Length: 194
Image (cartoon, rainbow, N blue to C red; front, side, top):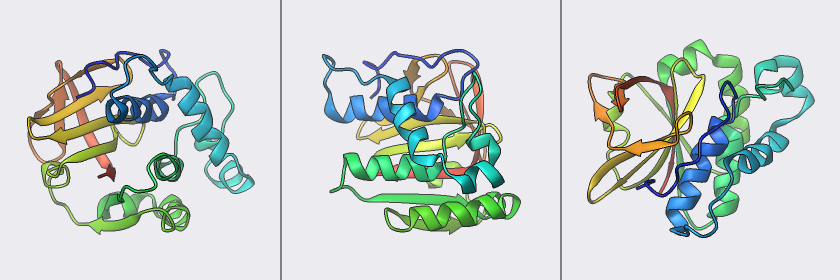
């Protein structure tokens, strides 16, 4: 999975959500001729989330800087549902993430409930949340980065937007994993596209 998608986000940008979703689009369509541009997907996502509520209360998701705004889970969920209306989308939020981000989570759940089922989970290890076939968007490293994962009959695969690399991640303990020697910590949000 993801081996044909080698595009990577611009260095020091917040385009990772767009590139992670673009990698899934590419893998689901298996169309190497028409590779989706992660920056174009990112631009579509950010256009959905620019509102006064976000600007006034969650400015890191709105800012128009050289890095760009960070992608909200609701933007990824609504775009995934538009792309695959026949697919089931589930969002898992850890209770720890919910507690430390209560305002944002309340705002986000209101925007997601029409498009996806939301589950709040206690402290289960990451591997218990990514054990079914399908695609996953995970927020990692203190909520500052999105990566894509996919599971098929051959196992679990990952795409890293910052490097354009993909492969089988090494799952370590609880919420830690690595790919090509780079370590990641799951931050508490998973979007699953079945």
